[in-house]
Length: 134
Image 1 (tube, rainbow, N blue to C red):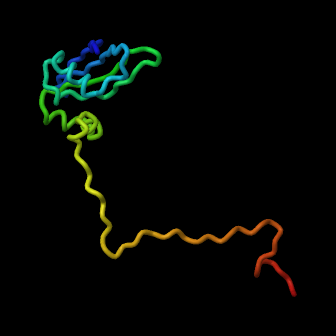
Image 2 (cartoon, rainbow, N blue to C red):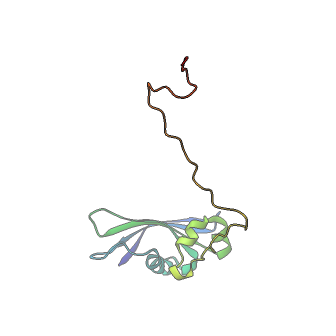
Image 3 (cartoon, rainbow, N blue to C red):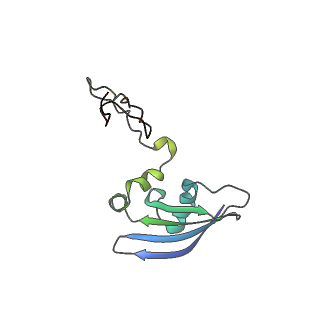
């Protein structure tokens, strides 16, 4: 796998470097975000934890992927600017925080499905619906 930076833009206002990159992966599936991040970080001169990969997509029929990444100057800046789902996406599987199972308060029951009456067919006369005499 070979990672090549195509475009690099400094963003001093947000204290980050924005990067467009290309990954060649002949004979292999699309590389994992963590693997790409591990190769991008040294090229950008920052720690792996400070790199966020926003997009990584393979080109159909080719062994090449392109993507967008951002490298921050500090962990605080990264957490302030990046959405939570991108931060979770960049974690290894075993390091992802797990949600505890939601428990319902005692006394509350799960809603039971309501019974529905079958619909009347057109032309049938129902009880109390326009039936005269009788």
